[in-house]
Length: 241
Image (cartoon, rainbow, N blue to C red; front, side, top):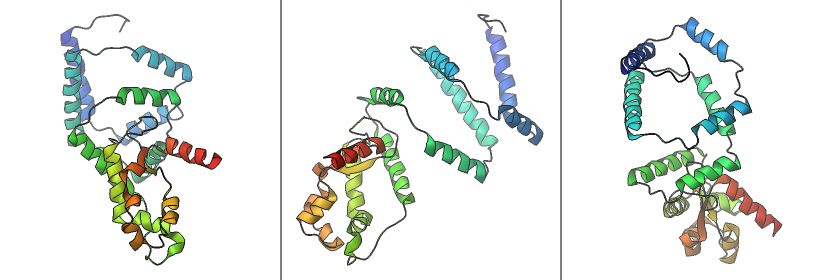
């Protein structure tokens, strides 16, 4: 196909049908192995990445194209449901490891922040964010201990229901958005403006029972939502002070 060549609607439809047939047909083990071997070690150069980024900047997608993309996405989803892909445990582990190592540059973080500014969120979106936060919290191993173990009081306080409820209310108030850089869709921390240790010392709290009845511990005015990067910056600044 030559650059700039126009494709008729009939040819486009033939290409769509051929693509559907390819997607619906399961690959053999030999074909899959060959495809993996051909992609092994393939890395997109920085120059190519910049070209791809520049090509997509300022591009406006028409409503008609958006509708076509929606229809194609629904059709592809149905095809995937009919022919589910089985992902091995080793592949899942590799994907998880890649996701954990993934970091965003300052430029990308700023783009995310700008795109999220002033964006209203539906009740469904907020509920989905709440569920994601609960799942992340559930993966953290429980550190609950008895109330009379004062040597590790912070862990005891963070394990009780009141702390988790306070944390969730801080996220809701801040719309699940980091108040430092406005990033969303990442792990969030409910940061104590006045340190938990300082409150515990000021009110002479020695066990969880006393912590439950201490109002300043559960005041929303003492909490702010921060992403891990901003949270680390705040604590680093405290150490300097």
